[in-house]
Amino acid sequence: MKHITETCNILSFVMKLYLKYTVFSSLIMFGFILGWHLFVSMYSSSYLYSETDTIEGNKVGLLLGTSHKVKGGSTNYYYANRINAALELYHNGKITKIICSGDNGTRSYNEPIQMQKDLIKGGVPIENIILDYAGFRTLDSVIRAKEIFGQNRMTIISQKFHTERAVFIARSKGIDAIGYNAADVNDSSKWKLMLREKLARTKMALDLIFNKQPKFLGQAITIP
Image (cartoon, rainbow, N blue to C red; front, top):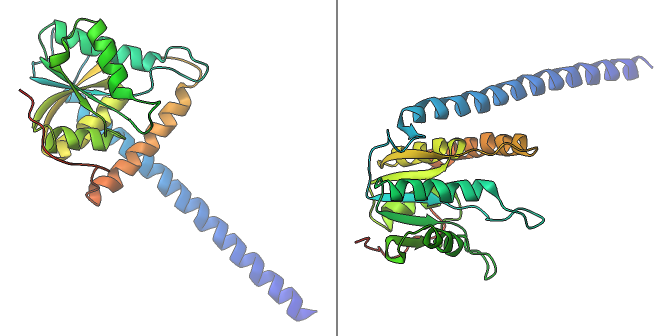
């Protein structure tokens, strides 16, 4: 009976120790995620613009893709606002070429082509639109803009939370990038998006540390 009691006491001590360090480790991890998220925002803030009157001009705008529809078939306003932001820059002479970078994972899903169609509707000539079919994620889009399309200077177009991360990646890779913030969207699912963004920034840190490369590169393409 004495041995059983001693064993139970040891197990209880081990369990308390385990819970203590699990909670401690979780707090450290949470602190790192939150701190890194804020650091990326602070670093990128001086390179972001929300008005065409104040932003400097660049030859190329990198338009980051997303689905043009949400589940149920209604308009994805994150997408629509990015298109509008690209059109604002183009028609105000702040960019002359637009790289549409997005996912083209299946025959029925093609973000770059959809962006091209909507930019043409907005008055951008097709010869000023370049399609990047391998922009499967932000890191891929940014690095490919440099390695494939030869751009060491660009304006990245997306919502603020996204341009913060994209500009950070770009400048970490030696690209002189600024960001133009498309109008944000406030809906009931916004909290999920912001949680995902915090995790995306944590993964970005690992990608940069380990020099993660795009899924596809390929032959260089010259933008006239």
